[in-house]
Length: 64
Length: 294
Image 1 (cartoon, rainbow over the protein chains, first blue to last red):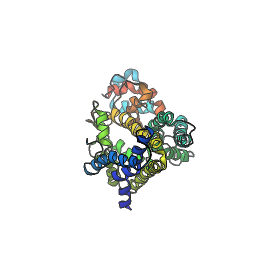
Image 2: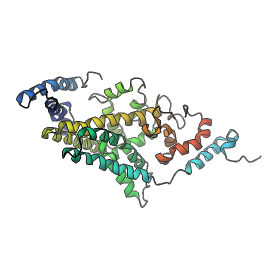
Image 3: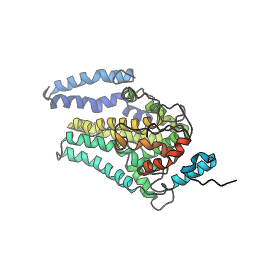
């Protein structure tokens, strides 16, 4: 149970569950990209560095 | 020996015990009042906040209109629960006790906080205000004014000790079950964000809850925790909390200019703390309290 809770509260879960689709929908809403696989790839590329930073450094914005 | 009348007019002639008595007499006038405004505020604020979700999802209002409303709702979400935490609405065993607990549980839902966890940790804050080891809000109190926003950003990060502050406190006081309860509230909040995001409403989720919660918590931490207790160097009944004049007035600062009254007499409702402060002020001056220019 504790493992599941920690997983749900982890930066990776937040990135996959929220930030990735958010990045995709912002790109589409701003008409920077059209719907399709490429927008999901670009969304992932935007979110990935922040997620890695949050996971390994413990901060989404480098500062801690 | 002549008897000295208990009055603020001859405050310099009163002994410490007489000061105590006079202080309690004045404070007593403002207690045992049911804060109905906080009851209505706490319940309606929560209903309004969650009503924004269907209103936005069914295109009744724009998410950009809902964003400032949601932010305001979250900024207002804590205080009614705070009244309930101190049993101000109704004491244990009183006929309206159910209402006290209802407001306590419902009001902080937009913040995704458990009432029971908030109450347990808040009582520790009162018992150990400004104690670096025992006050669960100490890291907020000691944050510098200049750059507080930067401190807050750091406290939002996964590695921040702020994330564990309440958990450590709950473990210490022997209520680890509330850590689990608080985790469930946070997971429920996250699952709402995740579900909305993966069904095409990520921007709406960001504007309805994610960003408003970050802004609302900033306001709550700054005015309800940092400002009344900074610089967090002093402990003791008359030293751990200060009065201050907010640049943005008493409403924007959530009534916290008079928070010193709350720490001295937690049963006085928020609405009455300004009036109580004005009557208690001469005694607080005599006690050497930090009253700023208020």
